[in-house]
Length: 106
Image (cartoon, rainbow, N blue to C red):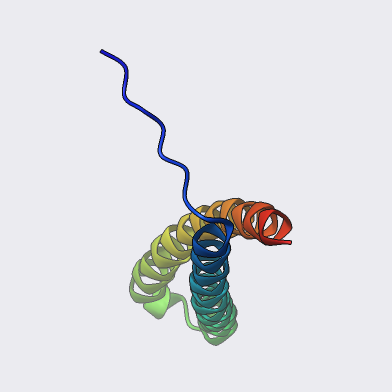
């Protein structure tokens, strides 16, 4: 059995599209803020790694400790990098959906 297609008035559809576009824009803003935070964390980790290697010069007895910390920082950096790539993909998807909704509401 087929379902009948119910058509909504244009105003209702337009209001829904505007609301969805607004929601998507807010999500995009939040995701962009998250990306900025991730970028800052990656930069901080990179600086931390560089600093650790600089402190190691002339102190071979610290090698094990520094290598462990560098390894931990690199692992965290990889995790954040993967998260950033995922957020980038989601941002592109949301931007495309927002553009489609905005075009439909015109």
